Image (cartoon, rainbow, N blue to C red; front, side, top):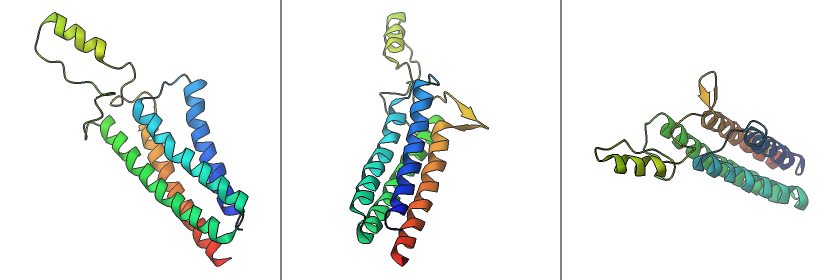
Length: 158
């Protein structure tokens, strides 16, 4: 059980980030800046879980799974922020959100339009049943918190 539990978290994390990469390279959805940031927690957990699998000790697996649950909590917070940016609840990073068009000259407007990023964080590119990719990541992160936490408890009992 000390190797199986982190292996499950590793495989699920790789599947989630693999799906994101498939939507990018096969589905031709260009990720925004926040989308790219949302992948980093999964990369960290993949490395952490792989290390726990290699070490194979119960205490290492338990610690890795606890840390994975915390990382996924941060991932969920980041995904919630991204959903909030998409819904215009929160101001997004200036690098990937559009400022309201100001009053000014045509030259000012042109300059502002040229400075607007092609892929904006505050626009939903794709959704399923009204849930954006950021929303799906929020759901996935919450599920992974539960999976990691439950696996940590099971490793502790074994």
